[in-house]
Image 1 (cartoon, one colour):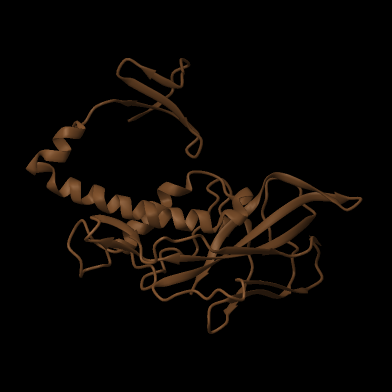
Image 2: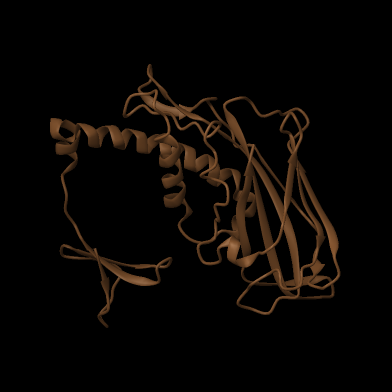
Length: 267
């Protein structure tokens, strides 16, 4: 793989060369086709470890999908290729499992969730560069309700954004992510509770002005009253910030890229 600095650029394939623009890196990339063919990987003993890792990759993909879909209530605050980074986090969690054999290792985020905390879904506007402030998260014993608090919050100089901003509002998204396990009878990875239906909820504050006076902000999000998160699962709490350049006649003028978001806690 190489970076293109040539004035001749294209998207697609030309002979054995593939070219594309990487929006995260903001570079044109050239790569060549090649590598072992599918039949060789599937049957050759030399690729046994590759087959095991490919199988675990499927489990990682299932886990990453539950995180992505659970945070879709803040999809307008996501930028960039989040899936590849979530797959890396899944792999970090998976390698902490020393009980299962290679190719069948569980993704137990209910035990090892700290690689997720602080993850920003915006590559273009990383959350820790956009927002500087202290937040408090609290959750009920049954994990059904989460409260996000910003006490004595002075919004002046707490936000960094490339455009002029005068207003902001705070989102709190909560979602359930189950562990992913190997089902020996089916010879495949699946969520520990199957079939699994995405469970998530999102709340948002009122629009507020950026100013020097301190305010207390509290955003509460809870699951439906008849739902309680099961064991071998985590509740993810993600905070989002949306910006407006100004508000006129009650209508906010949302800035380009909207804002940013990140996972603040896992319970």
